[in-house]
Image (cartoon, rainbow, N blue to C red; front, side, top):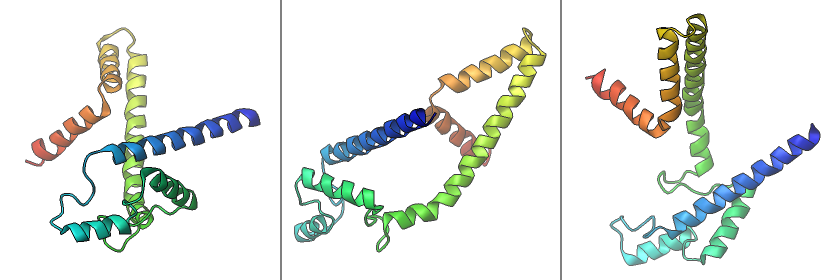
Length: 159
């Protein structure tokens, strides 16, 4: 059991490292920079790039980024002046956790209810409707379902 947990933990660490690395380099490969849309002078842009370390080679940026991540330093926010990213995450986390908890409770409740209905009415129309809803829930991508639900609850219901 300890060997299994150790293997899973190691796999998780490697996966997180790979995702962080891929995202880092994909963001750096995108055209433009974080200050391109701003109405600032080239001198100010150069100062901002220097302040955030964006004037350094990508390999050096990656090394600094990974060292800071390992220390728990996510850097300064570019959106919220004078705030670091970790503070922003800590401030937002309770609301995100509430939304996540509500969605888990809702999903489990609906899933168990549909499962009971399907079991009690096996091979009848309620079973087929429950199976159709479950299949739709699994096959429709979450971003499509999310967009649809946002439309329903914000535009249709609230008017």
